[in-house]
Image (tube, rainbow, N blue to C red):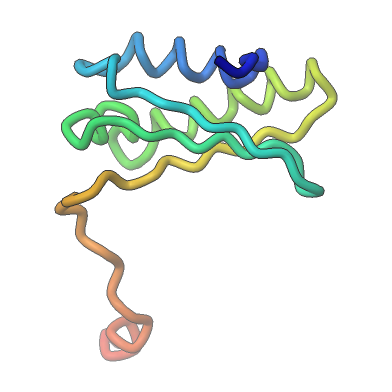
Length: 101
């Protein structure tokens, strides 16, 4: 098993505490010139719990990750991957917005 980094372990433990399906939580970590990217995969049923009302929970998680990253002199970003078969409504094209005067 690969060694887990502090930011990756923090995110995994935090999300597992929030969701109903903790065994479905997986976090992958990639490092590039932009910093650290943590990709989060969770059960489809837990998406609402992790994102929160109007994205408030996800925004808070990202803030906490930035603090963890500052302690390690790294820029940490979070990508929440949409599960297969998700029914989330996609944003419509910008041309629809132009019709609403």
